[in-house]
Length: 252
Ligand code: 13P
Image (cartoon, rainbow, N blue to C red; front, top):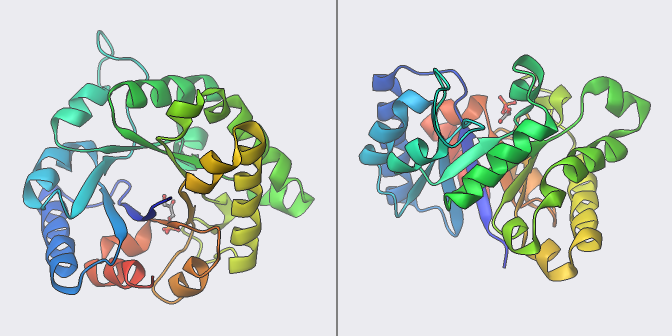
C-alpha cells in the first residue's frame, strides 16, 4: 500500500530560530488535530536539521534535507554527506529539485549518485521531476519526464525503486501561483505510474507514492488530493506557515 505524504520544502528560508519555531508549531498542531494517515515531512535547510529533528516528535513528523553531496565523504569543501544528514535524525532527502537542476547544474549523472548514496544509507529519496513551461506549451511534457526517469531512477533495482518517493513538480507551477489543474496533475501522475508498471511491474507501480508540487495551497489541496494517482504534495511557500501547512495535511 502506498503512503500519503505531505512534505514541506522550506528552501532557503528561515533562520535557525524561525525554523525550529515553525517545526514546533507544526508538530504541536499535528499532535492536536492529527494528520490521519498522512506522513508529514519537514524539508529544512542543512543548518537546521539536527535542531528541527530534536524539536519534533520523530514518530509524528519526519525530517528531510533538501539536497545531499554526490560523494560519501572526503575532500569536498562545503558539501554535506548523506551520513551527516542521517546523523541529525533526518530520514528523507529531496533530490533533483528543479531549482537544483537549473541553478546548480545537477545532471542525471549527479542525481544517480545522490539517489544511490541516499538509499545505501537507508534514507528515503524524494526524487523530483517536472518540465519547464516551454516544454508544456510544446506538448512534450510526457516525453520529457519519461527521459528524466529513464536517465535516473529507472536504473534502480526493483527493490531499491520500491524505497523512493517521486514528486512531480512542473516548473511553471512552482512559486508562480499558477497551479497545474487537478486534471493536468492527475494525468501526469497516472502517466508516471504507468511508466513504472511497464518498467517494473503493477505492484511496484501501485505501491509507489507520487506527489504533486507547485503552488499547492489550502485552497486547492483538497481538489488535488482527491485525484486517484496523487498521493500527496511537496509544498514550498505554504509550508512556511504552520496553519497553511496543516490545512494542506488535513485536506485529505
Ligand atoms: P511552491 O509550493 O512555493 O510553488 O513550491 C513548490 C516546490 O518547489 C516544492 O518543492
